[in-house]
Each structure stands twice: as C-alpha cells, then as structure tokens.
Length: 502
Image 1 (cartoon, helix red, strand yellow):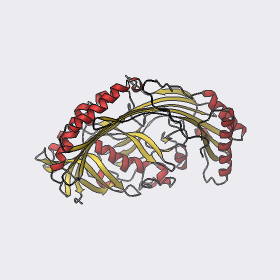
Image 2 (tube, helix red, strand yellow):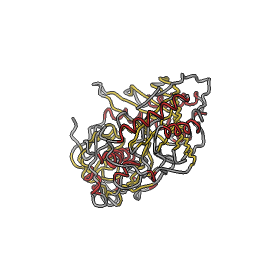
Image 3 (cartoon, one colour):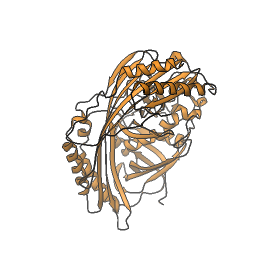
Image 4 (cartoon, rainbow, N blue to C red):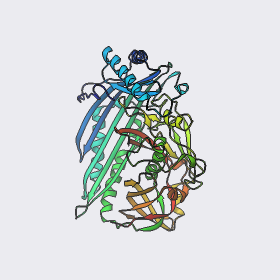
C-alpha cells in the first residue's frame, strides 16, 4: 500500500542546475521509521529511501522533440509482525508521516500474519554497512545541454541522409541517477549511487504502398557520458539510414529450416526472454504470473534437465562492470554475487529473492529488486548472460554453406511458460559459401526453448561478447520497470525454422 504522493516533477530549465546528489538521503529519517515500527510491534523492519533524477533529450528529423528533467523521491518501510509482512511508503518526511507510515506497515503485517503459510528466517537478514557508486569518467549530468542536443540532432540528420525513402529519424539520449539508502533493524546500512546512460536511435523507410521498414540501435550501461562517446552515434546513424533505405527494395527472407547465425544484440533478447524470465523463482512458485506468465523450469529439473547444447553456459552476475543489473546490494540488502543458471547445457539454478529462496530452503542470490521507493522488491533479473565461446562471428559464418544471418529483433512473443516463442528480425542477409550475401527483409523464426538452445553449435569468443542494456524490463502488478543487461556473442544455430511471410 502506498501512502502519500508517488512522485514529484521539476520543470525543465536548462539555465538552472539541479543538484539532488544527496537529496532526501537522511539516515535519521529511516532510523526514526525503524523505531516507530518497533514501537508499533514489529519483530523486524527494513526501510529504503530513494532519490532519482532523469535527464532526457529526444530529437526527430533534425528538430528537438523533448527536453526534460524529472525528479522522483520518497521512502518506504517493510515490517514483519508475527511472521506477516506489511509495506507502506510516502514522499512526505514530516514526523507525523514517518510515524503514520511505519504504523501502517506494521498494521498490514499484523493483518496478514494469520494467513501466512510459510515462515521467514530472521537470521538471514543483512548486517554490516557499505557504499557503492557507479564508476564513470564523465558525469552525464554535467554535460552541457547544448552538447547533448547537438549530438542527438545530428544523428537524426545522418539517418535522414540515408535516402529519400527514409521518412522518420529519431534519437533519444537520457541519463538516470538513483541515490539509494537501505537500513534495517539489525543495524545494516547501505548507500548506493547508481548512474545509467541510454541511447535509442532509429530510421524508418517507407515503400510505395506505405509499408514501413525500421532499422535501429539502442543500448544502456551503468557508466558516465563516455559510454555515449564510445558508440560513435554519427557513424551508426549513417549506417541505420542506409540500411533502412535498402530494406525497401530487398527481397523477402526464405522460410523453412536453415542454419542461422544470430547477432549478439538479438541473442541478448533471446537470453532475456527464454532464460532470464523462466529462471525467476517467484514465477516457478506461482507467486507471479504477469507478462507472459510462469515457467517450465521446475525445481526437480535442476541438475538434470537438458536446457541446451554442451556449449551453452548462462550466468546471473550482479558484479559485471557496467551492467544495468550491477550493484553493491539488492533492495533487500543481499550482497551482489555471481550464480550459474545453466552449466554445459544443463539447467542448474534460479534467480531468487530472500523469501522465494527460503521456500526452497536456500539463501537469496541477490535478485530482490524494486523499481522505486514506492514498490516492494520482487524477483528480478540481474545481468543474465550467455558465456562466450571461441572464435569470431566471421568464423561462424565461414562454416555455413547456405544459410542466413539475422540481426536486431523487431518483435517477439512467448507462451505463458516461456517454452514456445516467435521472434522477427529487422535485418537479414543470405550466407552463401561461408560469406555474407544479399540483404533480405521480413525474417522471423519460431521454436521451443530447449530445442533452440540445444541446436546451438557455435558461440563466438570474448572479442565478440558484449553486454547489452535493457532499460525497461516489465514485471509485476503494480507494474515495475527495471534495467538489466545481458552479455552475449553471436551464435550459430542449426535447423532453425524460419517462418512463412504473412
């Protein structure tokens, strides 16, 4: 339950600097809330405070479409009474609001205690203290607005120059900073300052019938402005414009089974949808079923089920440098760590939070994350990655006599167990005699998760491996949007069923 206002907004004014580095991050506020929860009868309580700042620049066809600065701040408290949990939150910091919010959390916990079917273990609650900050070379919030605007505007001009059929060119760049504080009744105190930067640029070309073809590129990292500078967005804009133009006249991709080499950005989404979500333990336990449902990976399958070929190794890693799922501690105070999910093709582990792990008699591997101060932590992906193999993408292509190369997902759908799926690609090329050939459009494929990963016969090496950032992984009701990264390299899949063109 949320008490008080959920968010606050500051109007944009490019000449007025905004500094919320420490904002509401007051230890005394959370200490007072924990004391109030104890006086209200809580056996245990933990409190979180978060102050978030976001700057956004968005351009379209050479003109500025949006400039904005958004500020959101508040705090919440999670209390346990007689085994029941209750949560309440507010953006108000007055003594009365602190008292009322803490008491409300305790009341909710007391009301739910009698209906609780499982018990919590207070011995696993975190202790200690620490501070985590995102590494960066150039703070994105100190980059002049005009510099950001000029870059985003010129990117769209480069896209539009790709050809007369390119009708829409867009570019968005934003920076987001979360200043977070966690404290609990066992004396734990963790401060975190996490900064993300994100870009999304696209070109849309239109044929004579009005049908559109899109080429795009986007990525996100926990880093400073140097991440944006490393992307060479002006060069990428020119490429996007040319490819969008060329897709208009390209023939359609063939259907039927083919050997297919899949680009790393596409593999990252496949990892997200067919490994990340089905290994979320709350889905397995039936606690969560929103957004394409539950999971086919049951607890008795661990260590036995053949998820993929022996080449396939997948890992959850909240220690990955630059990852959008990297942190010092999750929002339950569990330290960041690295955990195997698939080893040599065999399913071995889950993404878990404190309570979901206890349901299996285990300890959390640090995947209890909340999208804001006004939401409770739920099981969320950290950085789930396909481990690198060996060689290059060109080596994979060289091993294909007659096949296809696909790049950049354009749409996808999955069943509510994450078993069956259908994906389509923005771009496709023929592979003939071990070399890339003619451009194709409209490529899509379908399959079943174990059969797909079981057909992986090659994974490119570390030189081709890249962590791709996803800004808005959706889960939960009420909705929570959470950033995450997926490391991937290009892969070679045998007998992938390409779909008929609709």
